[in-house]
Amino acid sequence: MARAAMTTTQAYEVIVIGGSFAGLSAAMQLARARRRVCVVNAGQPRNRFAAASHGFFGQDGEPPLAMIEQARRKLAAYPTVGFVQGTVVSVTAQQRAGSPENGFEVVLEDGATMEAHKLVLAFGVQDGLPEIAGLRERWGASVLHCPYCHGYEFAGQRLGVLYHSPQSGMHAQLIADWGPTTLFLNGDTTLESAERERLLALGMTIEPAPIAALEGPGQALQGVRLQATGSGDARVVPLGALYVAATARPASPLAEQLGCAFDDGPMGPCIRTDANKMTTVPGVYAAGDLTLMRHNATLASAEGVLAGVGAHQALVFGP
Image (cartoon, rainbow, N blue to C red; front, top):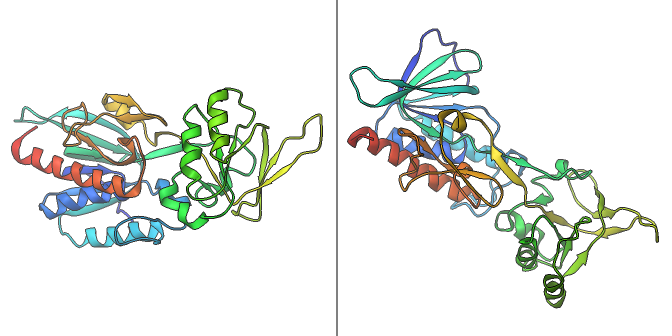
């Protein structure tokens, strides 16, 4: 939804930064509480690379962007909701006149400003992918992260797991429940011999050679081409899907600007929140992949519900 040019500062009770599963779920709770809420959306949801979202209640197999658009339409029916299409470049806490609480000034890329009593950070994360030829363009199609989200569609095919840490053996064992699995070490030599023997005993294949490229038509994966060695030419291992544990980092520096504390997660930093999804900065809430150790669309939406309810109750009862 396009935004008209702002000539004055727009004031809301809550501004939600991020308009995907978590952000829209948070805004819905606030809208139903009849609070003035605005969703600021940069239009780059993490799941935009996936053709379908799976495992989400009542929406299995639906395109993520269509789900987001449907949620926006339903949210727009509430009269206290506003939408802004744009990127937030800075957020600062400001003392509110006549109140012991801080408010927040939000500045957009085009220079427009907004104010709110509370914030919900739901701008998501960006995935860090290995630099392997042919991998990035297949991300979300045949190079995957979550077997619960996409594993069923590749069940029974030859599957691969890209080694990334000592936990990769457990990852490979999990993926093997969907089909015959190869653990690609990609030249890494840190897999312990005991773990190697355990995986082999479970019927998995271990491929130590470095990967040269992923091959197949379009976004489909047909095989992993290994680098040639001194003993022979490059080999191609047939494969239908490759699972990669991507690293994740916040898609915006706003939480750091505000001074929110982070915890170390298995794939990257997570914003620390309490049971009501408030961060370590009073009045600032966070939800979705920003706060989750395990990333999943259903969990992101649920986190948004908690953040929206938490922000509303803080408006009622105080910080």
